Length: 353
Ligand SMILES: C[S@@+](CC[C@H](N)C(=O)[O-])C[C@H]1O[C@@H](n2cnc3c(N)ncnc32)[C@H](O)[C@@H]1O
Image (cartoon, rainbow, N blue to C red):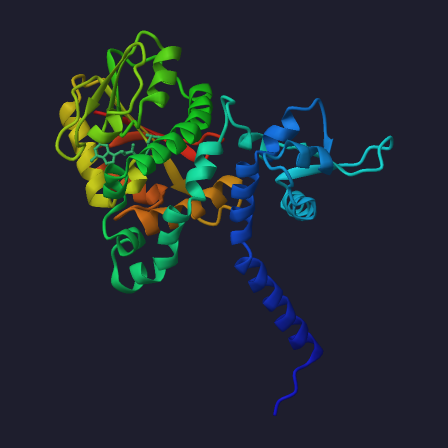
């Protein structure tokens, strides 16, 4: 029997702890859902400053909340840097405040990410990730293995899931479009801009509000368009981007190509080319670009999103610049600019000629 050295033993214990922490990663997800459902950020925010545990307990919608459980939940959320713990000399009790992360859990704010957290932690959607192995063993999406249908069909057949997905997209896109608008100038575009896969039109509304000389067409699947609110200067059109896309001078495609395989992306981009009415028009893609070896928060988000694409969307994937260049070339685009912005998405500005 071989003897384990002290160094080897330390490595075993460390490896075990690392694995435990990976295993427990799902609890961040559960605690986020819990914080959202209890509206902890909202309870704290309704006060002027940091508040105590008993004040949070008082705000919870229950006649007898479990205060011990709440204190352990808050310890976890503080440890995960989702809320801050505050110690004031004038007060013996630990106080809690909303920080740069939990402010996005506030509902009814312009920048809320509450709908995204609600959708992203939904047990129904999350169940697909447990079948990822089947998708790798047999091909096909984990979504299909789980639901017996592709994710777009699940959305179209289930109005509640459809609404929840659309709202999740709106809130995450709202933050991104603010950054896009601060870094990219749509001012040189003329005529009509089509948002391909534009969801319920909130992103395009932000663009045409800033650039009122543009007319907007928000183009998406009919079941998505049927729940789109009306916006000034925007026409909603339902259809299938693989069949045809409304004619216009320019096109915007945000966070949509990464849902599809290369062939499908080429088809969408070719359909844009066929529908473009001006040689000076542009196709503006806002999508993720994987930076090999990148390790900032945005790189992390892109690598995580690649697993979402793998599990849920047939052919979906995140791409490097090299991958994007291959697709653009095949779709007939030879002149383009990659524009990095401080966001998960980058801009790929494609010229017709
Ligand atoms: C990930 S969402 C992105 C939505 C929006 N652009 C954003 O950034 O939030 C992809 C969009 O593509 C739409 N879509 C999927 N298949 C489509 C098709 N065949 N034709 C048109 N739109 C489609 C979906 O309904 C969804 O709104």
